[in-house]
Amino acid sequence: NELSAFITGLPKAELHLHIEGSLEPELMFALAKRNKVAIPFESVEAVRAAYNFSNLQDFLDIYYAGADVLRVEQDFYDLADAYFARASADGVVHAEIFFDPQTHTDRGIPFQVAADGLLAAMRDAEHRHGVTSKLILCFLRHLDEAAAFATLKAAEPWLDRIAGIGLDSSEVGHPPEKFARVFAAAGDMGLKRVAHAGEEGPPDYVWQALDLLNIDRLDHGNRSLEDPALVRRLVEEGMTLTVCPLSNLKLCVVPDMDAHPIDRMLAEGLRATINSDDPAYFGGYVADNYRAVAAARGLGKAQLATLARNGFTGSFLDDDAKAAHL
Ligand code: ES4
Ligand code: ZN
Image 1: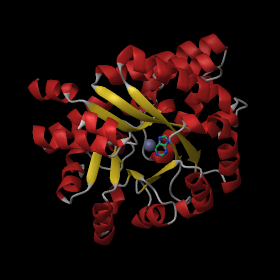
Image 2: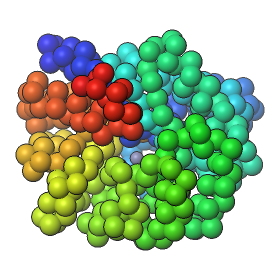
Image 3: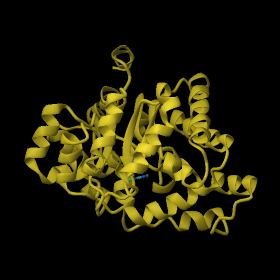
Image 4: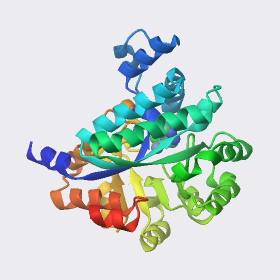
């Protein structure tokens, strides 16, 4: 329909995308075959049928298992190349993508293999689709501080091509404070800092991300709405929230899309953006996420345009590049 075409046509920035979460079942099977890796599924349909989650950990278990088919540079290239083709078709013109190096180095796949494969696809996407991008290295918060420091060390030769660091994986029980020192070290190296907080974790984890990690952007942040003083702080700081509606639905952060707080976030003055998180697992890419909240919450064109603009404002593009998009 008309609103759907408007959404696709809006130039958009995607700020919350785990590249390993863009691994479609078809590519998972193709890579399993190419690399002679066994996967615990009979068919593409069986993989899709397994994508029913009651919480974040349910999803993470299957997401880390899926990533096992990624073995050589070409696999990471093909993964990102497929993402950029789909994102571009959705009207994404700039993407800041996460990768989880520890998921690979812990399987014996060197940092270099993932980083160089992704960076090559990013470079080609700019020529092929006109999509610009930045790379963000995420630490797995279920692992310890020493492992995060070792990852930062391994990344050193690539730091001119990495925009920032993030924090993802199992939130509850792994508060931001666990990573205060490694975030400070990364900040000293000139890296931007983002963190998942307030997805399943309490508002206190969002306070910690602000006060102890000095974040430049907040990933998810949904549970901030439970704490009015926290909402005031986020509004005052002009903090960008990277909200992921279909993810919230699939991981039961919201009971149904009609209950999604995206319009409440905007009404409270929060700088919310719309993103796909792990599109191959959650049932849609970025335009599908816009469409889902537009339909469920009755968003109009002005609100959708605000959400899209917020993506550029909250991006790590330099001021000139931002101005060109705004
Ligand atoms: C993730 Cl939705 C989400 N939350 C936390 N960590 C993640 N890693 C990949 N997707
Ligand atoms: Zn995420």
